[in-house]
Image (cartoon, rainbow, N blue to C red; front, side, top):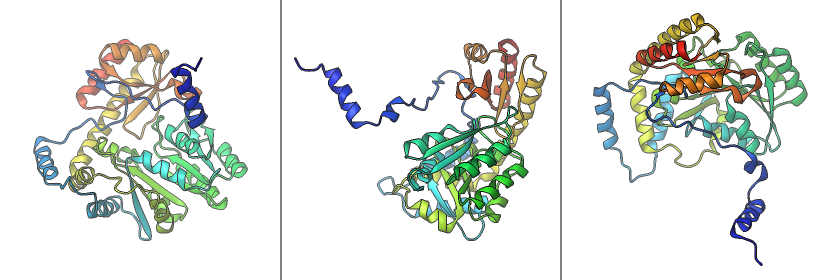
Length: 365
């Protein structure tokens, strides 16, 4: 008797697909229909109606029958000017930061060590493992600061080809001590590796990483337009010395930035003042939410330089469920790492959304 179809397909998967892939969990996106969405660190503000109309008219003139061409180069130039990219550097584009993370992992010598503090952005480790690199995570301290001694020891022992440092970090939202960052950057210079400073949340932080890019040839800076206010457009970019970035750019898929995405991003940069106003509002609401959390019995919020706040509560699972029942979706990050036990990550929303969240937290924590 022949094997059943199910057994045949199972055997086929065993023969053809990687076992480590089959053992992994896919990146989960929470359903959010009908809920106040405060789980994925998006800018909650839409463009004013007049700018929406202008953008719509402009996108209507884009030639959708043509592959992206010069407009992508225009976007690179505009982003370099917006970021203040130093002379001698180049910029490459990704379909969001995720694609750039994959490009960097792919560019390394096979079997290289990729290092990051933990907890941090999950895609650093996931991309490294899927692309044949060895990922080494170094736990943060209990207060979510970098463990300098452990990081330096790991650099010496592992000689990583690439060190990821998110500044500010996700999901902890804090910007790490700059002195510690500088010493880690110096250690990576001594051991011959690259450092990528992930500035996804730069619009909400008090400082940026551009001075490190200027001073260190082995440092690259990655940014995204997602937190800027274009999460749906999927534009990430990487800046660094031309001799490095030009090699990474060889891995960029042809036409990876669609014509509508490029045009929307150029439009946004031309109206950067509106997005700066939105970021200022988010920073104001972050102060308001932090003050409410500090007054909330049983809650321990942690310092934030991003558009989110990490808070420890007595029972994160129960609080998450209670908030969702009230129509508010946040992120329970407890399963991500033992240091995050009973922690919720709260995206900073509009003034109205912040008010709803503050009222709900009184009953749900």
